[in-house]
Image (tube, helix red, strand yellow):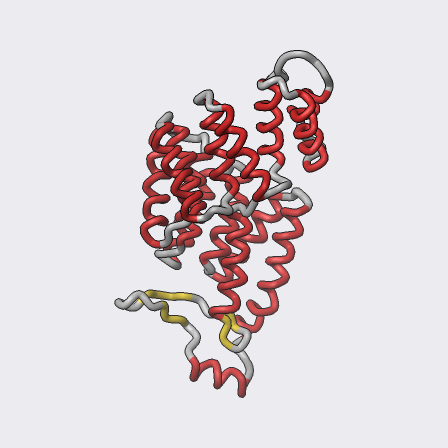
Length: 289
């Protein structure tokens, strides 16, 4: 399942390929009236730099940026989010790249630094006003954050997601919109958003999974099973889908099938508490506290 973080990484790679001029990361500085980006480093200046050498600051930036990106990624992979935050923050100050601001915002969200995350995503949009990923991440942020009025924040999420959809319709935006509606208790609107996501991208497993949860809540067990199995078919390592399918099958008295789903869940994620509980044979549902 491809999360927003993976999409940002893809955007970063695309940015490097698209905007690199003779090895120099060009920085979008403004938009022309026709919407095209203009850059600080024009062709003539680049040709001159080839002959006489690059200005000291640009040369240093070229040398430091890949190293700092590697530092940030390794820190996050090792679980040192604070170090990753500092590395992305330094990159933002030096490169002024929208995708780097999104990475800073993503790590800030993981750290629960909600205000910093919001500033980072808005910073990305200040650089590239139509950067859809930043809008999606703002939508996701306002769904997840816990430091304000959750109702108001969820409405803000919907505004950002609608802006993203107006520029570039995507299953991810529609799935996030479904999550926002679900948080508001608007089940029919959530179902419609998830349904549209599956129509736009028939391989978007998260939308099938969420539709399966709603079908289960509505008592349509057959439809819930079909949708959860579809999510697993699309992503066999989607352990949450295996777990929810196991719970559904257990409810239907199909214990052998349920146990197989819980075992698969633990194979994928050995730390999964709920599947381990169900496999322990203890009657009832696992305690949540």
